[in-house]
Length: 457
Ligand SMILES: NC(=O)c1ccc[n+]([C@@H]2O[C@H](COP(=O)([O-])OP(=O)(O)OC[C@H]3O[C@@H](n4cnc5c(N)ncnc54)[C@H](O)[C@@H]3O)[C@@H](O)[C@H]2O)c1
Ligand SMILES: CC(=O)N[C@@H]1[C@@H](OP(=O)(O)OP(=O)(O)OC[C@H]2O[C@@H](n3ccc(=O)[nH]c3=O)[C@H](O)[C@@H]2O)O[C@H](CO)[C@@H](O)[C@@H]1O
Image 1 (cartoon, rainbow, N blue to C red):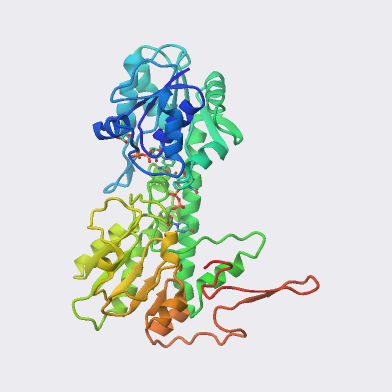
Image 2: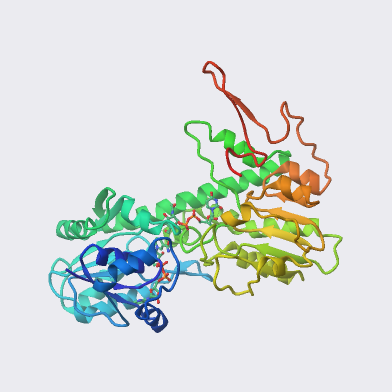
């Protein structure tokens, strides 16, 4: 079986390599010459756990080109960005990929679309373009097979997750199922193309709305003078409650984008767009915190630790850091950035000592594991102030070194850093030490860490 994969990015490349490692002859196609050159010289254009080994395993069955060629299966994994001005999906890459397949499409071929698209895109946009080949759908097979793997665990999830396959007809669905079954160990669920498109968007929208709720809880907790992290840990003890983590905003190629794909053609959505608004406003919220703390400081410098959109990845697409930096620079703050994972960023990246030298406020924007154990001793800052927008630092260590620590969502840290009029509640237990007493005998008691989390630091 020969598979032609169009788009060799975070999704297309690992997918192509998985097919090749499981016996298919794969031609990987990317319009970017730099990607093709990089792969042809034996390198990977980005990092992802396990990808190097997979590449070595798959190399002998994997060719890389800038143009597609005749194949049994064509797989489209090209970008589907959001137009920032209109908040409408940009389908130009999907359209051009379909056009590139047209000269090579033959009866009996299967085309699968993995890119995330608004509901109806397969029927309205992709299939009609493919039919310009003179082969009608039905004579060629078509399925939407949305990708659900999470960056950082891409290979485990591509092979282990369940998969939705939405075929144009029975033959399409069954053929696509058989092909994915070569490497997918998770359950495969079959449906139609439009439902598959919708399901993918629902999943990411659900996560976005829940993160917005956590962000709203964080702001309410600060007003109440309590620690939202402790509150979340305790609320999540309820068997039917799962509150997500607040943070400085939602980034990445998917969660910040896909809700708009779901709503772009609708006039009746309020909750989804409100959630987007809340999450998009989080960089403003963190900057407001920084502004209030830096009020008396002349020519303040902010050091940002973490510009990647989330922990332990180098991907900076749609990262909340962009908005935070732009807003901060517009207000006259000097910005210095450090991120050991990100290879490139719009703002210069420095090593930790350089990024923090002379700083007036360190802001943790990304939950990289390496930041958790960060030792503040020896950092040559001017003002000992840190805003932990991810609640990952060892706060005791930082306060011991004389830092004022402000944690997003922790009302008691608001008190410590800016004396206000909200008194923190007088707890039955020491601050941050919520206890649980189980009804079993003997009673079990568990203390949360000072971060309000269980077994975290
Ligand atoms: N990255 C993720 O975690 C993730 C997860 C699930 C779904 N998705 C979806 O998968 C799709 C691809 O995302 P990605 O992160 O892999 O994108 P990406 O930007 O990493 O890679 C896409 C690649 O496609 C290439 N390309 C563009 N037009 C092309 C064409 N006509 N022919 C061949 N190559 C072309 C680009 O040069 C680029 O290298 C998007 O729709 C995205 O929403 C992404
Ligand atoms: C439904 C789902 O799981 N979809 C996943 C998602 O992958 P992702 O990497 O984009 O997702 P997240 O890890 O959620 O990160 C997004 C942003 O939200 C911030 N965040 C997260 C959790 C939290 O509690 N509080 C936060 O603030 C985080 O820092 C970051 O900025 O989309 C992919 C493409 O469609 C999917 O394939 C993949 O399955």
